Image (cartoon, rainbow, N blue to C red; front, side, top):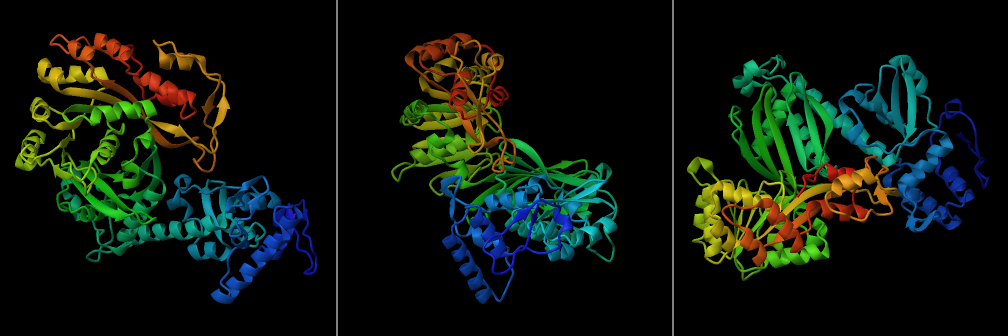
Length: 613
């Protein structure tokens, strides 16, 4: 479909069918677009007048710096005819333009673009001249994103030069401009780093297993300005994409950068292996780690700012691999790590039980679950809930996950024999009210935690077990006497994280009864009439999921449960009694989330232990 020009005095614009490539090459005209929108009753005449006025003011102030016409229309925030409570957005206008131009619409997702490859298709200056962003390359085709669908003069030239079919999609002009800058900047920085000369020699050779002890001799400098730019881009990119972890993984020739988002790993970029070595070295410098030591694992931390200006902490961990140092950066955004209980996914009932557990003056409260199940977030959020000027909160952690001004935090230092048990012993002389122990790993730590609770302190800690009842089995296996557990254990909470359905696109669907029964077995749970299913939209990158929430199994230790904590502990009997006393197993908590449309059966089955109680 072709957007035809109209005489200056005309009051309407006509869209007729046709191939936009066959029409004269030209840029979009603001007046033409406004007339078309008014004609379709998407804008009022007064809104169109305001857009023209804004355009004239921009030209007078900016010295005729060109901006895309849709920007001025989107800035009006005019009511959307389809949903009057919402304004017309840039994406709405872009989709409208794509229909008029007869081209596919695309919301650019940088996570799905091979930046290193697409930026080799055409030069940056050529891409800027026509405002075209290469987004996909195959052996036969190249796909470009553009916000100027009627600017077609470059198509014939590119067909001849690239010897490939040229395909086009219409995308948000703000995204096109942004990624034209970002993609080519990071690609240029990587290329410059590869071409960097140290001592007059270009980078050569492969950092492989046989050269593991020589990794420090990489020719790319960690302080090279191009490496600095790459690391800055990488961190900002991770914050924008809501990543919880950044993985830098060296390989033989091209090394991988991956992000974990909502618990799922995504390939993001590939660097030449020598550049990856320099990137890791730069990160080690920022984290105050030993750059020269590449044979041993190291831990560090750094603090930076997200694009919105919030301070964000990153926990760093490196390990030697066959082709260089692998680095993982775990991101701790205070706005994400510390939440209210309802934001963690607690129901009102669960919040009441948890508050009853942790508001005791003494005793041990355990949070259990596998790595990555959200235990740290729960503990920090709980400490924030409990902290007060009249309360002394002390922690011993390995490592300190997030520095908090309200707590007195100590880190385990194995090199000087400062372990968890020694740390607790020290904290007991610091007049604490609440002690948080990062993890109960051995008998000595467990004994010191129990000693702390017996002397009138509330102790919070974590264990790696599948559910609440198995935590007692674990402590008994470590060698903790059963009578000490009887007197000190206040409560246990097992938890998991599940992805939540995207609120923008989830749709009702009939429940899959076999999957529902597999999840809830051996309990009899009413099958809901319908559940929500993932669909996929722009907001969730077509995954159908956006964010994560917790599911919880809380066992408040009652007198009846204390009687069951014996030397010959029966875990099954304890579990059954705990359910009678009000514990809702993880299965039932998951079923409740599904019935409320928060998540899906498949997602819960993937994380909830399905063993019979």
